[in-house]
Image 1: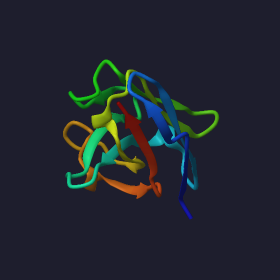
Image 2: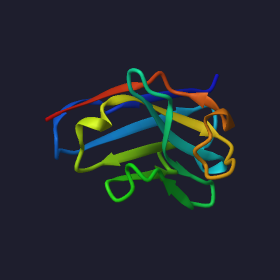
Image 3: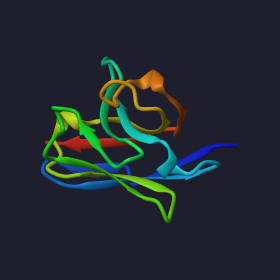
Image 4: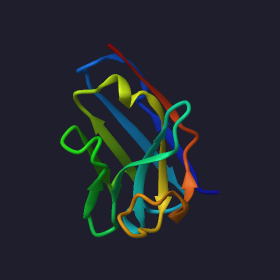
Length: 123
């Protein structure tokens, strides 16, 4: 009965910002690792950002300095703040909850996934 409900996706112009939200029910996010992944057409699924239960984070090189993962324990919600968006950020974005393996960006470590939300960045 774990459910991840995503919101905040949409279409933006390059250089713009979006904040993705993922409300989690059925488990408490601060007891686990949380992460955002994305997959663009024709590309492999890519780990974007991850946060360990202790608060330590890792962001992919491609988004470091532009994207920030965060968590609101009171709301049991995770976020991905995306700034300075680029066309290459266009993808389906998925939130996930699970375990921290290696650098936190290992997809198979996560057992609970959202349905995905589309982010489209135009130039």
